[in-house]
Amino acid sequence: MQIEALALVYADDALLVLDKPAGLLSVPGRGADKQDCLSTRVQVVYADALVVHRLDMATSGLMLMARGTSAQRILSKAFADRQVHKRYVALVHGLPAQPLAPWGRIDLPIAVDWPNRPRRVIQPTGGKASITHWRVLAGADSPYTRVELEPVTGRSHQLRVHMQAIGHSIVGDALYEGASDLSADRLLLHATEIGFVHPFSDQMMHFQSRPDF
Image 1 (cartoon, rainbow, N blue to C red):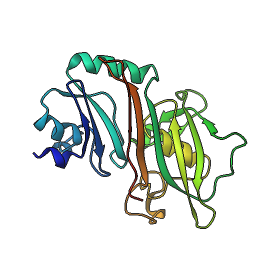
Image 2 (image 1 turned 180 degrees about the horizontal axis):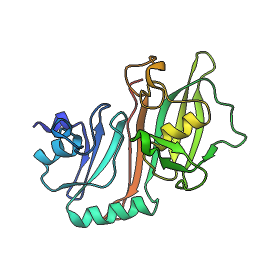
Image 3 (image 1 turned 180 degrees about the vertical axis):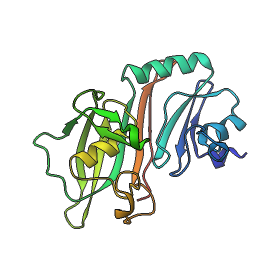
Image 4 (image 1 turned 90 degrees about the vertical axis):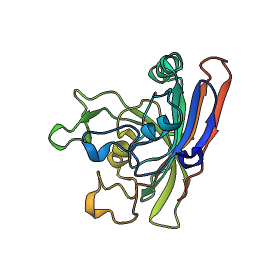
């Protein structure tokens, strides 16, 4: 496989930064039809590449992988300790009210919706603490608003569930809006920034990717 086909943003002996397209799994799923994914494609070229975090299949944008178990251990701990800075851009339905501070805060616990997996739901009792910061980037002249999202925690589907919970679901979200959302042929959510400390050099690393919507 050609390195260019992987949308490689950066590579060194410790890590890889890739730009995942929407519609591609981050890691293999269950079943023979769900084995094609970004991590498997990367490992054809970089045999030592290991996963440290994931993006939803429907989400595009920057994804970090470690090279080797030592780098994986350090980077995984950085994610667990919330030392990795991530930002996303999304197009949402409607115009959210501007927060009083520069960034709004959504603090709503999330739990698995067991009868409807893989969906998640807001669950005040028993849900895992989940926090998202958000701000409006552009809107008002259309039925949609461009927002920037910063997850403090890293729950599955967190940004999608939180935006739906405040009444401004992400455009193209077939899982949470279903057939009622035919506004786009994909989820309009893109991981635009990732920043972290290099696992070996201690250098601050920062990468950006512009969405195509």
